[in-house]
Image 1 (tube, rainbow, N blue to C red):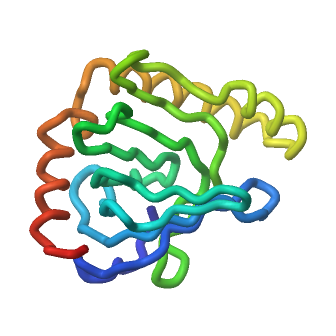
Image 2: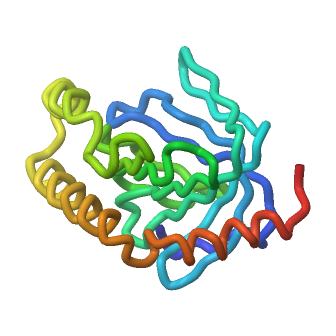
Amino acid sequence: MNDAIPPDPGTRLMFRWRKWDGGPHWVHECVYLGRDQWGDWFGQLPGWHSSRPGRDFVPEHPNVTLVDPNGEYAYTHNASPHRTRVYIDLGWDIRWQGDEPSGIDMDLDVVDRADTGVYVDDRDEWDEHRVAYGYPSEVVERLEALALDLEARVRAQTAPFDQRTAREWLERLDALGLS
C-alpha cells in the first residue's frame, strides 16, 4: 500500500473500491488485522455488508483480505466451507486514503473455486473496460502479466496463497471476538 500509518488492529473500517473513471464500486465493511511481510490484512465476518451500485452482499463465512505493498491486488481467502477459496481482485493504486483503504478495481480476478479450480476471471469485462476507460498500455501490460503470475502462484499455493498463512489471519480475526 503506501507509507501511511495504519490504524490499530481491531479497528473497524470501510474498504472502498472505485472504477477507473472514479465511479463507485464495492464498499466492504471490515476490520484491520495488521501487517506482515506480505502487506496489510483485513477481515470480514458473516453478516457484515458489502455493496456496490445495484448489488448487496452479506458473507456467510469469515474471510481475510491481503493488500500487497505495491497496491496492485487484494487477495481474499474465504474460510471453509465457502466454495471460493481464493478471490484476487487486480487493482490499481490500492492504498490508505485517510484512515480507510481504497483502490481502483481493474476487472481481472484470479479465482480458486472448489468446483472449477484456478482461473483468471472477467477477461470479457477487462477487454470492454480497457477500451471504454482508455487504460494506459503500460497498465494493461503490467496487470495482464500480474494476473498470469498470480494464477501460477495460487495453483502452487505458495505463501501468502497457502492455507497456513490464511489460517493464521483467520485465527487473528476470530480472536478479536467481534460480531
